[in-house]
Image (tube, rainbow, N blue to C red; front, side, top):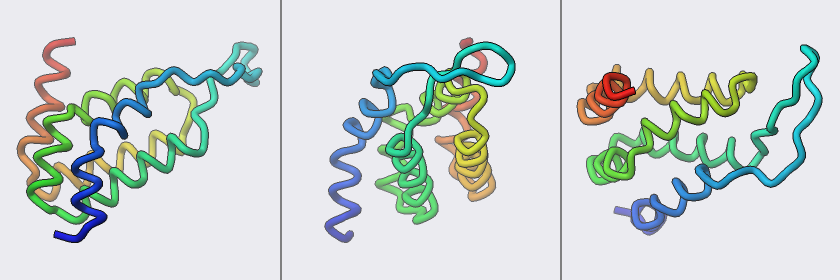
Length: 117
């Protein structure tokens, strides 16, 4: 395995913690009259990096992603940032690639999460 992949696996909990961290920025006015919490460029890039790691189909990475419970976190992010279509498309692509590639643990964790909610 390359150094960057090893570091990604080792730092997976830090990626998750960053995505879980509350956005300290101010809410922005939405067209529908409410206010939205902005996702932020960095959060979107972390989700894109996760997608890139999944596309590698490296067993150690996929195992770690499932262990750290990224599938559940991604579903939560879709609820928190419900009006962010960029995020939704990225997450859809992650789920699509993971499930159609036969990554069973990823798919199982999503199903278990939905059954427990």
